[in-house]
Image 1 (cartoon, one colour):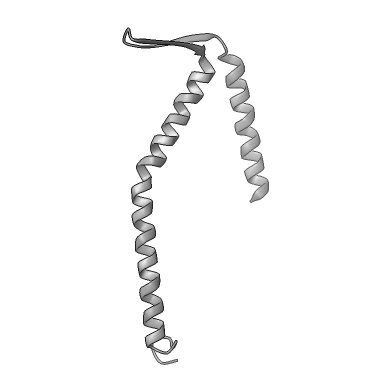
Image 2 (cartoon, one colour):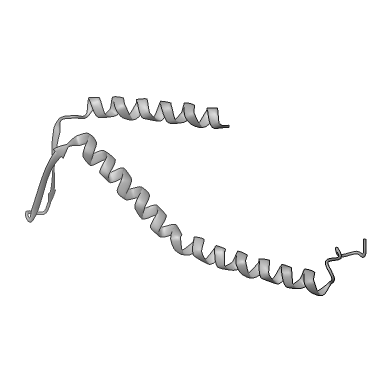
Length: 93
């Protein structure tokens, strides 16, 4: 599994390297007429990708926190149930 992770990481690195080499010309981003920013196209692409990843992680943060709280509550309930039954499995075995 670790070897597969290194292979995928290496392929991704080479793909991003070729993408960077092909898209190094400057590009301009304008926000109406208030703000203008010039940077290499690859930098803008990677910035947009990183912003999308960050937005996705922030969007899933609430659900993840709720699921962790629910899991903690269920584990406490399971421990309480095991302690009250004397540690015996259901069915009396």
